[in-house]
Image 1 (cartoon, each protein chain N blue to C red):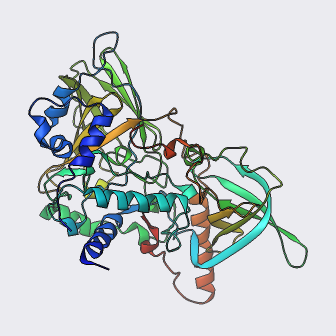
Image 2 (cartoon, rainbow over the protein chains, first blue to last red):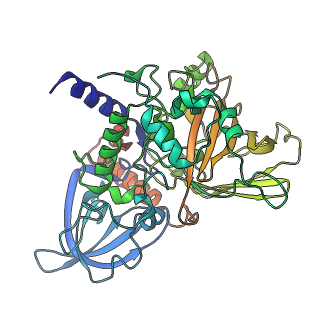
Image 3 (cartoon, rainbow over the protein chains, first blue to last red):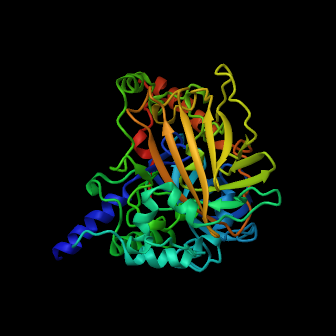
Length: 138
Length: 348
């Protein structure tokens, strides 16, 4: 790597480390040491403030079903990013990768949402039609 | 790599925005022109008028940007990114929004579908939103400010005995000022509505509405204090100047107190740009005032209600987690573990 690239890389890292506090505390509620992968059926999605919640029925190895609650983004953000009330219908099979509640309750922070076709929500596509995809000149 | 002011790109951008540079400004990069003085922009663009003749600033304005509030120390006093740096930063931000994160760190890396922080460097290629002081950083705390900060309880070490141990934002009371006017993870929008003698500024972050008299109403008595203070406005040319005082001090913005004084200057610098120049002062907290320059662009939709207290399950859940931790620790004869505050920073 030539010197110019090293300098650029340093600048990018320096300019990107500004940290913002999330609106709600992750650490007070979820456990970074308890990653969970949940494959289940969407029961409903609560479009509520300040954060949405997905209710998910997950079949256990013994055949029983456990209902989980998955915390998601704020409705404002979801809508602006092109995710609407019709995007996740009851009965849809999805996979959630996230982190479980510290007290072992059946709740998780939804770090990632994988749709039935294997696509991760919005990933790999900048053309969602959401306003945020417009160029800055708009 | 040569360090230089972002000239060509900024001029191109300014041309796209429909600026009409004054004679003599053409030899100066648009980015530098923006920085020179607030009156430059105000005198080069004539704002449209309301039916009663005031400059018309009405609309819903989006201030998402990846430009940080404070400049990274590595940049020193360098005010502008180069074209190459701008592109690299926007590419990185785009990857974050559209692709899997480079590194998953629980709590640090919210899924991109959770957040809406923008993907563009602000107009003018600035390396920080803070334009004064020149190092682009919030000035040092006064001795009194430092002492106050040292006495402040560390909320993240709280045992979460009740909701009172959590911050006003988590409690959905208010995002506070100036926080509700500065870029954050989402809801980066304000709406301005005007009537003769009055302007209303609505903040999407926890849906605050500030009704700002423009009729010369005197400031409230110092004994009257509010979470978001009290605002009074007036026109200076085409610029709406809003002075906000009478804070109750409970928001503790970066250690500030009831002495917090905000001066916002809103100028329509182009058809599709509203510029906010915000000066923050509190002589008991910072050694000198500091100023932010934040360009805003029109949004395609309306402001969306953010009724934060509607279903603030996170508060219920974190208190439940705290009580369960106490029970589990008591059963073992130990003190409960505390949350790690480092888990709550969000990298953008």
